[in-house]
Each structure stands twice: as structure tokens, then as C-alpha cells.
Amino acid sequence: MGLTLPVFAGTFERVKNTTTDWIRRFHPAPEAPAQLVCLPHAGGSASFFYGVAEAMAPRLDVLAVQYPGRQDRRNDPMLDDIGELADRIADELTPLTDRPTALFGHSMGATLAFEVANRLVRRDRPPLCLFVSGRRAPSRHRPETRHLLPAAQLVGEIKAVGGTDARLLDDEDLMDVVLPVLRNDYRAIETYEYVPTAKLSCPIFALVGDADPMADIGDTEAWGEHTTGLFEMRTFPGGHFYLTAHAATVTSLLLERVTAMV
Picture 1 (tube, rainbow, N blue to C red):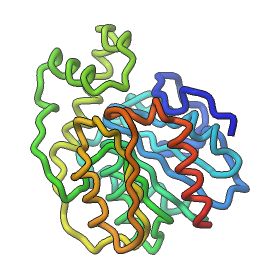
Picture 2: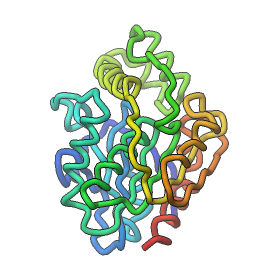
Picture 3: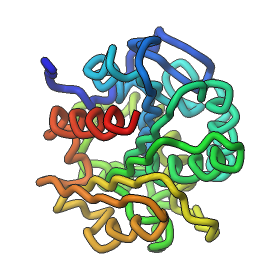
């Protein structure tokens, strides 16, 4: 596929390709038989998936969700409730689901993708499949309070998890901008309460690093409890951001699973 790293890589560049305020198409693939909607992690932005879109075009059309409060949406009020975020994203995606649509979410984005999937089902727009990465199943609650930490400790938590350029974390001016966004997103995911609903019928594919401190193997396997369809789990060497080191493999896996279903 000619993939080059970094395929998964967050940047702070201005996003140029806009479908709506919420949705980005970096490399449009209008002739592709299906589309993959990608939802980023806490503190993340749509541009994290720029390389994914480039690698998959023209075989798959990749849409990336841009949460409010970051990059070109930095002046838009942030939302710190997963349910409200899922409602808004489902509203944006519904008119765009004119062809088979798969969902991929990493970390907070995995839980959010699950909630969006449930909303699309209720709108008779069921997803083709759901990819969940670096996140325990919604039914496996664990109390977390990172969003309440003082700034210095919060930065320490970010460093421990990895996935962010250390030079950015040492830039005080930049962190003054980034930390409120990250704290907002942590609040959203850490105050999320799973409400049992009917199981999804689409396949769920769970991906996780074998040393991820935020998603152990058992809690990741529990995603299988949320579908009546196929469940598959894939483990990779690495921590919470295992996917940056295994970008080519992860991207190929997503592409193969989606295209096999259409």
C-alpha cells in the first residue's frame, strides 16, 4: 500500500478539507464502496487521521470527526458529555450515510463511536462494523479523576500515557491552550455512565496494546458482550498509543475488514 509513518500522528496544522464543522475529508474517495468514520482520543483532533485517509484512498473514504474547541474549531464551545457529543455527531453523520459506514474510535473515541453506533441504529442507519481501540468495554466501569488533577500532574499523566511529542508538553504557552481541551475531554469520558441498551448486531473489532495501562486485556475482551454479531480482538505490542508504532498493520487491518464486508 505504500504506507509511510507517521500514519497516525496528531498535528496542530489548520485543517483545510471540511465537509461540515464536525466532519473532515482529507482525501475524498467518492467512488469508494464504503466509508470509515474516525473519532479521536481525548485531546485529539481530526488531523490525527490525516495519514489514514491518505493511505486508504481511493479504496475507502475516510471521514474524521473534529470535536469543538480545537484547531479551526478552537472558538467553538467544548462539550464535556459523551451523550451530547454522540447526539451531535450522529446528527452530522446521518445525512452522510448514503453508503456502508464503519466506525473507528481510539480511547475516548472508542466509547464515543459505540454511542454513535447505537444512535445510528435507532435512526435505521446501522454501521457496517465498529472498531474500538485502546479502551475498555462500556460495561466495565473504572473510577477515574484525571480531569481534577492540577496542571503539573495532568501533564505528568499525559507523558506517562505517551502519544504526545514531549516538546509540546514542555511548551508552557502551548499547554495553556491544550490543557483545557484535554481536561474537558477527560471530564467527558471519566463521567460517562453506560446505560445498558440492546446489543449491536454489527461486528465489533477490538484493538489494544498489550501494555496499555488504560485498557487491559480482560476489559477489552468484554466488548464482545456488546454485540450479537462477530467479535474479534487483536493485541499489539505497546502501550496506549500502540497504533503509532504499528500504523501500517492497523491501517491494513481496518481496510481489509471493511472492504471484505462490502
